[in-house]
Length: 223
Image (cartoon, rainbow, N blue to C red; front, top):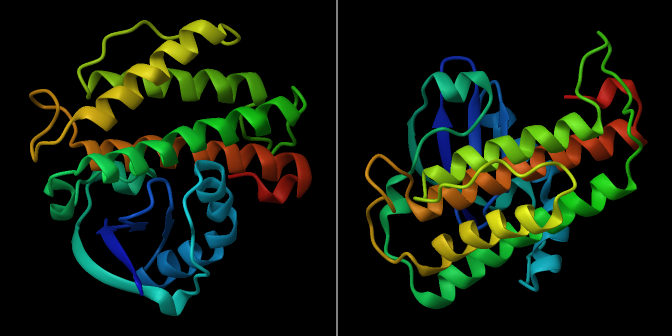
C-alpha cells in the first residue's frame, strides 16, 4: 500500500512527511523535490524501523499517496516541519502509540550511535560552515528540552555527557507520547502527540544523518 504523506507548503520550501513514520520527513523547493528527497531517504529510514523492530516496506517515489496538504509558515521556510496535519488529531490506540514511540526512541538510539562513532571535528561545508560534533549534540539536547515543554515536561537541559539526565528527559518524552490518547495537545498551546513525535524524530535524524555525511562523504555533503 502507498505510504500516506502530508505536504507542508511554504513560500520557499516544501516538507513531505510520511504520516505513519515519525522522522521520515524531507524537504525541497517544490512538491516533486520534496517527494523525491523522501524516497531517497527510504533506505536510511529503514534502519530506524529495523532498530525499533517495526517492519518497513520497500519504498519508491511511486509509493506515496498525498493525503493532506496545508500551507506552511515561517518555520517551514526556515527549515523545519512546523505544522500539524489534520490527521494528527486522530486518537491514538495503545498499540499505535507504542509503535510511534518506539520509532522516536530508535531515532535517539541511532543519533547516539552515530555521535559515538564520529570524530570531535567534523568536515566543514563548502563555505566553512557546520557545527562540530559536540555542538551538534548540545543543539539537539537544547531543542529536545524546548520540545519537551510542548508536552508538559519541564526539565533543565541535560549537560552533554550526563547520561542519567539525558535518559530522564527522553523517558519523560517517551511516556508523554505513549500515554496521551486525546485529539488535543498534551498541554494548552502545546503539541499534539503525533506532531511531536514527527518533529522530535525529524530533528534527531536530520542531525544524525548530517553528522554521518560530514564524516563519510566529504565537505560538500554538509547541510
